[in-house]
Length: 166
Image 1 (tube, rainbow, N blue to C red):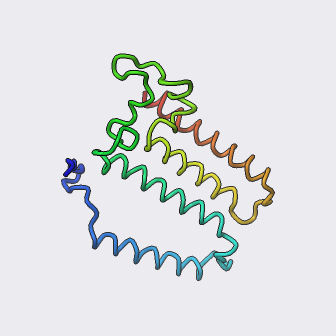
Image 2: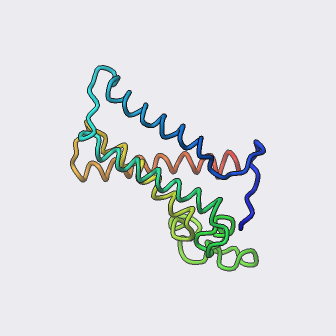
Image 3: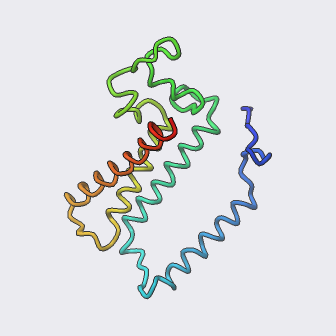
């Protein structure tokens, strides 16, 4: 049995069955309402299938990342979110140089599960945005737009993480 820290609100972090039932109920209501009130437009699942698929993949990835951070502490060094971030270093804490080229920046997503699933989540949301109905649908435009969205997102992340909150 692994140690589960208390949340700031004094509750443990185990899922609550009643809470999950409320979430499921709210999701059903949400999708019913989306079909009825779409600002004068009919919502078609077929039109939104790719965007919704990428959004769902993003959610799955984000949930997997959270699980690796908070529930997989007995797992190996790639999955264990409390320690896996050390994989980017050659010999943490003695040698904090990169374990391999890019392990501390462009290839950090290859070093551990939290970074990998965070990358999948972010990329999926970018593709959800650029495959939203109304875009040209041309593959090269989708890839171009996804790259633009990812660069913009990464710029915001870097500004906050490396400059403002350093």
